[in-house]
Image (tube, rainbow over the protein chains, first blue to last red):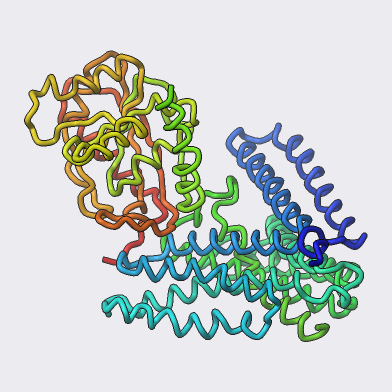
Length: 318
Length: 215
């Protein structure tokens, strides 16, 4: 048995530098927010501190999982899917009757991640889109209650697709053959996707605050402006092009395209979760991440960027 | 001493993991939770998990101070359940059947309050239909009047009836809301106090994220 694959991924230098860079950014952000916080009203300063503390915790947990090796990373992403699915099913209207079907859906998470761990791409890619798609209505038929059947069948499948299938594409990046990406290794791909997705969120916010005037979709999210979207997209493209050859097998031009995908898709994912919250009349999807809201509030963009980035790079390089 | 260790071990190894990892809580205003007695927590009641969730919010060392007031007819019906309820959970049994005179009814609760303990009370009286507020009983007012400076903190929980409804022993993971409200002190009018508490419950319920239900 090859223990090095199980316990520790020998990380390429670029990936180690990328991790250190993220930590340095956090240090700078913490110092800046402490200085800025002195001139703010106490509730806003507290919220800012909370947000940053949560960033420290999230990044510590993710880095720890990535450094601890492939198995630990897969367990981490499976848990992330579980928390996200639980959160989604908790805010959706759910029939009391469906409890056992929902328990079955939770139990499908380890099964799905098992396909990833044995590198069975063919089953990974159809297990939820095909088999769960067929299984959920079947299980609901067995319950024998037709009132609310359509609502249950559609919303449960959608919840599993977003929180388990879409997010698990990040995990599948980890088991793509390492030799294709000597510069960054499997962890490099994950860092590239995660960092650019979150960077895009931040940059859209920053550009929107600085220049934003015309709103894009005020009925879904009043904070999204054209300047924020375009500014975020261009900044993300630039960084994606620079980081592409450094952390992934992508060339500069391919990196630019990856930047378009991540910037555009991240925007849609963000709006998707906003639309869900508007429909339900809630402001956050949970309280698990202080200062940010719930898990879905944080991974909203990744629901869209992860599958698109994965299939882009999988088609081009693997 | 043995009971205390047993209680702490039960909460550390079973209750806290189930509540925080299996279920997941959306907690609002945790800082409002009274950490020292005498105090009364008045919560709505949907599930057996209500008591365990509220107790799980407390640090292990404070747990022996937290005493749920629970139905004697339910929890004392057999010897094992009675031992578990009294020794591990630390309930104060309450006679719901009306066999006991009013002053004797609350004797043990008043004793606990005078020792500076924190009572968990469900003024709806029983778990009732899932996630529906029942009329509140007045006993809580008299209990709060029994000593000086005893406040009643309103707490609303939602979603536990979905994670573990009445009559079903299977726990299915769902996030549950726990909203901790203000502390109220009883004045001279029992009905006014009950009305205040009820309207507090209703406004706290409105903060819950998990309230979209299909009936």
